[in-house]
Image (cartoon, rainbow, N blue to C red; front, side, top):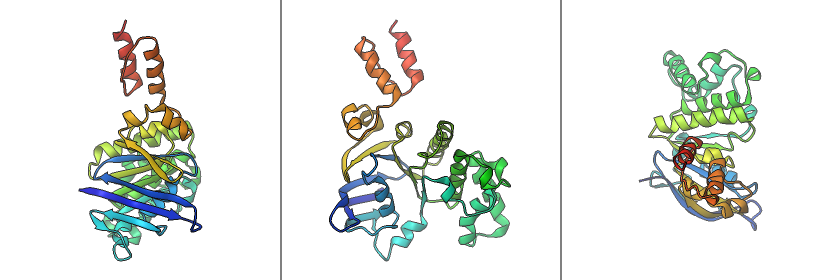
Length: 272
Protein backbone atom coordinates (compact mmCIF):
# COMPACT_ATOMS: atom_id res chain seq x y z
CA UNK A 1 0.00 0.00 0.00
CA UNK A 2 1.29 3.46 -0.91
CA UNK A 3 1.50 5.91 1.95
CA UNK A 4 1.05 8.76 -0.52
CA UNK A 5 -0.02 8.71 -4.16
CA UNK A 6 -0.12 11.70 -6.49
CA UNK A 7 -2.13 11.41 -9.71
CA UNK A 8 -1.97 14.01 -12.51
CA UNK A 9 -1.46 16.90 -10.09
CA UNK A 10 -1.40 20.42 -11.55
CA UNK A 11 -1.29 23.88 -10.00
CA UNK A 12 -1.00 27.49 -11.14
CA UNK A 13 -0.73 30.65 -9.05
CA UNK A 14 -2.03 32.93 -11.80
CA UNK A 15 -4.44 30.59 -13.57
CA UNK A 16 -2.34 30.29 -16.73
CA UNK A 17 1.28 29.32 -15.99
CA UNK A 18 1.49 25.87 -14.41
CA UNK A 19 3.99 25.64 -11.57
CA UNK A 20 3.10 21.95 -11.17
CA UNK A 21 2.24 20.30 -14.47
CA UNK A 22 0.56 16.87 -14.55
CA UNK A 23 2.77 15.16 -11.94
CA UNK A 24 2.17 11.55 -10.86
CA UNK A 25 4.19 9.43 -8.43
CA UNK A 26 3.79 7.27 -5.33
CA UNK A 27 5.63 7.05 -2.00
CA UNK A 28 5.71 3.75 -0.15
CA UNK A 29 5.33 3.55 3.61
CA UNK A 30 8.60 3.90 5.51
CA UNK A 31 10.65 5.10 2.54
CA UNK A 32 12.84 8.19 2.26
CA UNK A 33 12.18 10.10 -0.97
CA UNK A 34 14.18 13.11 -2.16
CA UNK A 35 12.69 15.59 -4.64
CA UNK A 36 15.43 17.47 -6.52
CA UNK A 37 15.14 20.51 -8.75
CA UNK A 38 16.57 23.96 -9.39
CA UNK A 39 14.92 27.13 -8.08
CA UNK A 40 11.54 27.57 -9.73
CA UNK A 41 11.13 23.88 -10.56
CA UNK A 42 8.00 23.68 -8.38
CA UNK A 43 9.31 21.42 -5.64
CA UNK A 44 8.37 23.66 -2.68
CA UNK A 45 4.94 24.29 -4.22
CA UNK A 46 4.55 20.52 -4.45
CA UNK A 47 5.25 20.19 -0.71
CA UNK A 48 2.58 22.78 0.08
CA UNK A 49 0.07 21.00 -2.14
CA UNK A 50 0.73 17.68 -0.42
CA UNK A 51 -0.03 19.07 3.05
CA UNK A 52 -2.97 21.19 1.90
CA UNK A 53 -1.41 24.64 2.32
CA UNK A 54 -2.37 25.21 -1.33
CA UNK A 55 -5.44 23.93 -3.18
CA UNK A 56 -4.64 21.89 -6.30
CA UNK A 57 -6.21 22.91 -9.61
CA UNK A 58 -6.28 19.41 -11.09
CA UNK A 59 -5.44 15.86 -10.09
CA UNK A 60 -5.78 13.69 -7.03
CA UNK A 61 -3.83 13.05 -3.83
CA UNK A 62 -4.32 9.81 -1.91
CA UNK A 63 -3.18 9.32 1.68
CA UNK A 64 -3.34 5.70 2.90
CA UNK A 65 -5.38 4.94 -0.25
CA UNK A 66 -8.02 7.52 0.75
CA UNK A 67 -8.71 10.44 -1.58
CA UNK A 68 -7.73 13.74 0.03
CA UNK A 69 -10.57 16.25 -0.22
CA UNK A 70 -12.25 18.82 2.01
CA UNK A 71 -13.61 16.06 4.23
CA UNK A 72 -10.35 14.11 4.63
CA UNK A 73 -7.65 16.82 4.46
CA UNK A 74 -7.65 17.23 8.23
CA UNK A 75 -6.63 13.60 8.72
CA UNK A 76 -3.67 14.08 6.38
CA UNK A 77 -2.61 17.33 8.06
CA UNK A 78 -2.68 15.88 11.58
CA UNK A 79 -0.48 12.99 10.44
CA UNK A 80 2.02 15.10 8.51
CA UNK A 81 4.80 17.36 9.83
CA UNK A 82 6.53 19.99 7.69
CA UNK A 83 9.98 21.48 8.39
CA UNK A 84 10.75 24.74 6.56
CA UNK A 85 14.13 26.01 5.39
CA UNK A 86 14.57 28.98 7.74
CA UNK A 87 15.04 27.73 11.32
CA UNK A 88 14.46 31.21 12.75
CA UNK A 89 10.89 31.22 11.40
CA UNK A 90 9.92 28.02 13.19
CA UNK A 91 10.55 28.85 16.84
CA UNK A 92 7.47 29.61 18.91
CA UNK A 93 8.62 28.89 22.46
CA UNK A 94 11.01 30.97 24.52
CA UNK A 95 13.23 27.94 25.18
CA UNK A 96 14.06 24.71 23.37
CA UNK A 97 11.88 22.83 25.84
CA UNK A 98 8.89 25.12 25.26
CA UNK A 99 9.22 24.83 21.51
CA UNK A 100 9.33 21.04 21.46
CA UNK A 101 6.31 20.97 23.77
CA UNK A 102 4.21 23.37 21.68
CA UNK A 103 2.59 20.75 19.44
CA UNK A 104 1.75 18.49 22.37
CA UNK A 105 0.11 21.38 24.23
CA UNK A 106 -2.09 22.08 21.21
CA UNK A 107 -3.22 18.46 21.30
CA UNK A 108 -3.96 18.61 25.04
CA UNK A 109 -1.34 15.96 25.82
CA UNK A 110 -1.31 15.01 29.54
CA UNK A 111 1.02 17.37 31.41
CA UNK A 112 2.35 14.64 33.69
CA UNK A 113 3.65 12.67 30.71
CA UNK A 114 4.85 15.60 28.63
CA UNK A 115 8.33 16.03 30.12
CA UNK A 116 9.23 12.42 29.43
CA UNK A 117 8.24 12.85 25.77
CA UNK A 118 10.14 16.13 25.45
CA UNK A 119 13.33 14.58 26.78
CA UNK A 120 12.92 11.49 24.62
CA UNK A 121 12.66 13.44 21.38
CA UNK A 122 15.27 16.01 22.35
CA UNK A 123 17.66 13.11 22.90
CA UNK A 124 16.71 11.62 19.52
CA UNK A 125 18.17 14.70 17.78
CA UNK A 126 21.08 15.15 20.22
CA UNK A 127 19.62 18.27 21.86
CA UNK A 128 18.85 16.97 25.37
CA UNK A 129 21.49 19.22 26.97
CA UNK A 130 19.93 22.34 25.43
CA UNK A 131 16.36 22.19 26.78
CA UNK A 132 16.69 25.36 28.89
CA UNK A 133 18.53 27.30 26.18
CA UNK A 134 16.96 30.23 24.36
CA UNK A 135 16.70 29.88 20.55
CA UNK A 136 18.87 32.96 19.99
CA UNK A 137 21.81 31.09 21.52
CA UNK A 138 21.60 28.16 19.10
CA UNK A 139 23.31 27.61 15.76
CA UNK A 140 21.25 27.10 12.61
CA UNK A 141 21.87 23.36 12.68
CA UNK A 142 20.81 23.13 16.33
CA UNK A 143 17.62 25.07 15.57
CA UNK A 144 16.73 22.67 12.78
CA UNK A 145 17.31 19.71 15.09
CA UNK A 146 14.92 21.29 17.58
CA UNK A 147 12.39 21.75 14.77
CA UNK A 148 12.83 18.05 13.97
CA UNK A 149 12.20 17.10 17.59
CA UNK A 150 9.07 19.26 17.65
CA UNK A 151 7.82 17.56 14.49
CA UNK A 152 8.68 14.00 15.54
CA UNK A 153 7.12 14.31 19.00
CA UNK A 154 3.73 14.49 17.25
CA UNK A 155 4.43 11.03 15.79
CA UNK A 156 3.63 11.93 12.18
CA UNK A 157 3.23 9.29 9.50
CA UNK A 158 4.87 11.59 6.94
CA UNK A 159 7.73 14.03 7.62
CA UNK A 160 8.31 16.61 4.89
CA UNK A 161 11.57 18.57 4.83
CA UNK A 162 11.30 21.67 2.63
CA UNK A 163 14.93 22.69 1.94
CA UNK A 164 15.60 22.02 5.63
CA UNK A 165 19.39 22.30 5.29
CA UNK A 166 19.68 24.97 2.59
CA UNK A 167 20.40 27.86 4.99
CA UNK A 168 22.89 25.97 7.16
CA UNK A 169 26.68 26.05 7.08
CA UNK A 170 28.52 22.85 6.06
CA UNK A 171 28.82 21.63 9.65
CA UNK A 172 25.12 22.25 10.32
CA UNK A 173 24.15 20.51 7.07
CA UNK A 174 26.24 17.47 7.94
CA UNK A 175 24.85 17.21 11.47
CA UNK A 176 21.21 17.51 10.41
CA UNK A 177 21.80 15.10 7.52
CA UNK A 178 23.17 12.46 9.89
CA UNK A 179 20.21 12.88 12.24
CA UNK A 180 17.74 12.47 9.37
CA UNK A 181 19.55 9.37 8.14
CA UNK A 182 19.53 7.82 11.62
CA UNK A 183 15.83 8.63 12.12
CA UNK A 184 15.04 6.94 8.80
CA UNK A 185 16.98 3.82 9.69
CA UNK A 186 15.50 3.55 13.20
CA UNK A 187 11.87 4.37 12.43
CA UNK A 188 10.61 2.06 9.69
CA UNK A 189 7.05 3.39 10.07
CA UNK A 190 7.96 6.99 9.24
CA UNK A 191 7.81 8.14 5.62
CA UNK A 192 10.21 11.00 4.79
CA UNK A 193 9.92 13.35 1.82
CA UNK A 194 12.82 15.77 1.38
CA UNK A 195 12.50 18.75 -0.95
CA UNK A 196 16.15 19.58 -1.56
CA UNK A 197 19.04 20.45 -3.83
CA UNK A 198 21.50 18.85 -1.39
CA UNK A 199 22.99 16.00 -3.41
CA UNK A 200 24.64 14.42 -0.36
CA UNK A 201 21.28 14.28 1.39
CA UNK A 202 19.63 12.77 -1.68
CA UNK A 203 22.24 9.98 -1.64
CA UNK A 204 20.80 8.82 1.69
CA UNK A 205 17.29 8.39 0.30
CA UNK A 206 15.61 5.31 -1.14
CA UNK A 207 14.19 7.10 -4.17
CA UNK A 208 14.89 10.33 -6.05
CA UNK A 209 12.45 12.39 -8.12
CA UNK A 210 13.70 15.15 -10.42
CA UNK A 211 11.49 18.14 -11.18
CA UNK A 212 12.11 20.67 -13.94
CA UNK A 213 9.75 23.49 -14.91
CA UNK A 214 6.92 21.89 -12.98
CA UNK A 215 7.25 18.48 -14.59
CA UNK A 216 8.54 15.19 -13.20
CA UNK A 217 11.36 14.36 -15.62
CA UNK A 218 12.96 11.36 -13.93
CA UNK A 219 12.64 9.07 -10.92
CA UNK A 220 14.52 6.09 -9.58
CA UNK A 221 17.12 4.88 -7.11
CA UNK A 222 19.71 7.50 -6.06
CA UNK A 223 22.62 5.37 -7.26
CA UNK A 224 21.13 5.51 -10.77
CA UNK A 225 19.69 9.03 -10.86
CA UNK A 226 22.70 10.72 -9.26
CA UNK A 227 25.09 9.12 -11.74
CA UNK A 228 23.13 10.69 -14.62
CA UNK A 229 25.37 13.70 -15.20
CA UNK A 230 23.41 15.01 -18.19
CA UNK A 231 20.14 15.19 -16.26
CA UNK A 232 21.78 16.73 -13.17
CA UNK A 233 23.53 19.40 -15.26
CA UNK A 234 20.18 20.24 -16.88
CA UNK A 235 18.80 21.15 -13.43
CA UNK A 236 22.04 22.95 -12.45
CA UNK A 237 23.31 20.33 -10.00
CA UNK A 238 26.57 18.41 -9.84
CA UNK A 239 27.03 14.71 -9.41
CA UNK A 240 27.99 13.69 -5.85
CA UNK A 241 31.75 13.85 -5.30
CA UNK A 242 32.06 10.07 -4.97
CA UNK A 243 30.39 9.56 -8.37
CA UNK A 244 32.49 12.25 -10.06
CA UNK A 245 35.63 10.62 -8.71
CA UNK A 246 34.30 7.23 -9.77
CA UNK A 247 33.86 8.56 -13.33
CA UNK A 248 37.39 9.98 -13.45
CA UNK A 249 38.87 6.73 -12.13
CA UNK A 250 37.01 4.78 -14.79
CA UNK A 251 38.71 6.91 -17.43
CA UNK A 252 42.10 5.66 -16.19
CA UNK A 253 41.00 2.03 -16.02
CA UNK A 254 39.73 1.66 -12.43
CA UNK A 255 36.14 0.42 -12.49
CA UNK A 256 34.07 0.95 -9.35
CA UNK A 257 30.42 1.23 -8.32
CA UNK A 258 31.14 2.53 -4.83
CA UNK A 259 28.45 4.31 -2.79
CA UNK A 260 30.91 5.97 -0.40
CA UNK A 261 34.46 7.32 -0.29
CA UNK A 262 35.55 4.40 1.92
CA UNK A 263 34.28 1.87 -0.63
CA UNK A 264 35.95 3.82 -3.41
CA UNK A 265 39.30 3.75 -1.60
CA UNK A 266 38.97 -0.01 -1.16
CA UNK A 267 38.33 -0.41 -4.90
CA UNK A 268 41.40 1.70 -5.71
CA UNK A 269 43.62 -0.44 -3.47
CA UNK A 270 42.12 -3.62 -4.92
CA UNK A 271 43.08 -2.48 -8.41
CA UNK A 272 46.77 -2.17 -7.51
